Image 1 (cartoon, rainbow, N blue to C red):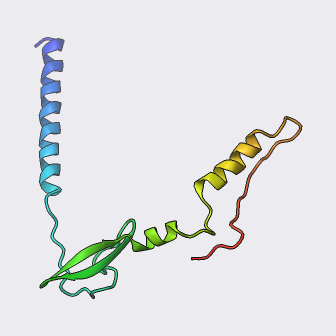
Image 2 (image 1 turned 180 degrees about the horizontal axis):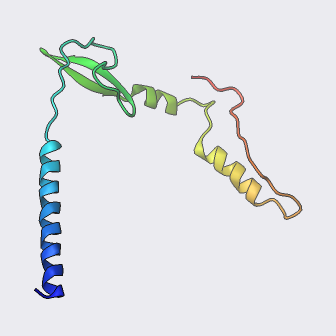
Image 3 (image 1 turned 60 degrees about the vertical axis):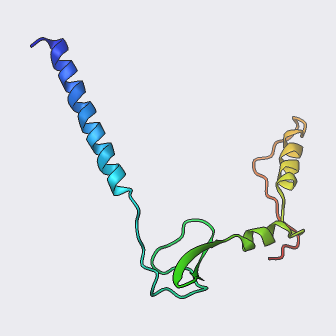
Length: 116
């Protein structure tokens, strides 16, 4: 066999192995069923740890389901004492526009009277 034929065979083997690996990964990523029967309605699930947001167990007819609750996020948007992006951007812009006599090694911005 020539070196070119050996290289082609190796590529075919690697391609076949990669395709098999993807097929196994797709089968492994199939639906995962979680038993929520022992979970408490109105509380976060104990079966798994939610990554982001407020997840609660809710009752949907006879079934217990996971509800992603966006109410805390919506409520936090309407808080007039929380810092907003434009407040922080204003401070960064002011630091960048400072003339060359000085420099700002760090910048800290605090809300004066934050409320939850």
